Image (cartoon, rainbow, N blue to C red; front, side, top):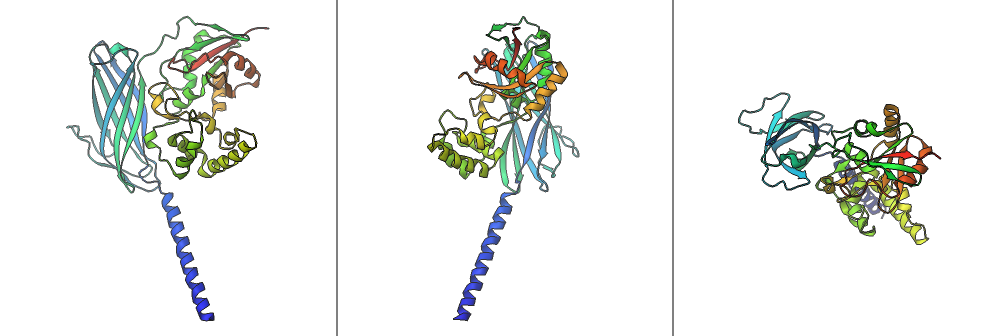
Length: 392
């Protein structure tokens, strides 16, 4: 009996050890980075813009973000979407992709040969976009989609990189249209379509300073700030997990967390354990008449994520997170321009949330001045609002 018991205990220990080993093996596998090759949109320049020809050139980059893996790029291609206020049919586009590898010259015939990017290294890609035809002046924005095939430890995985390049720039010296409010006047400032090429402080200097005076407050919407910081994700790049697939059905249909990709974006930022616990505690709190606990516990991004359709084209096809270091940004605006500043989240429901401000003394004025959402929720392209408090 003792021998049989010993054998059973030994067999159980072996099975347990194998099970723990398999769990450890699986945990290690899930930490693998796979084909983590990142497209960086880089810098773009308008080389020519005439009545019948536009030439854009971008110096972009493909970066291998893994710690020790080699990733190959066997294929690349690109396509563009043109955005403007009028009919753009008939405009022809020609895209040329030229590799700028650090150790291999490009082929004269334009063929993209398969290339290996080592861990923590990158390779350059020069992209030229030539537009020809009539009514080229109607083009306001060019949206490039760079399709690249990755080949590596995770197999053959297609990916898409994006670059949004503005062509239309409003006159910064146009007369301001001030709107009257109880405690302040407000001026919704029209800008070009803000992209990764822009810096918020430079935007303020370009469009706001010509109309500002001492005592004014400049506010920037949280979504435009996040866009300039490249804090957006294409839904095709989001990989929904077990938790997001199940919990997204419990949010209101109007919530940005009511889709699996929207909720997975939050999971990726805050972590599965935090989101799961926040949901469980929030559900219990709601039973006892305390709504909103989930958003208090799941992290700041739970309230800030904008799902698809949440902003103006072409970003209406992306999931946009909230901005990073909003307080640092408003401090920088105050230092470089002398204006009080705030990053705000405002909607048409008369809700005004001040994410960060250069002084807490301005928050009350902003609540009154922005309650009617003068920046708008459509495609007004007025991400900045200048607020001029009234003297009392």
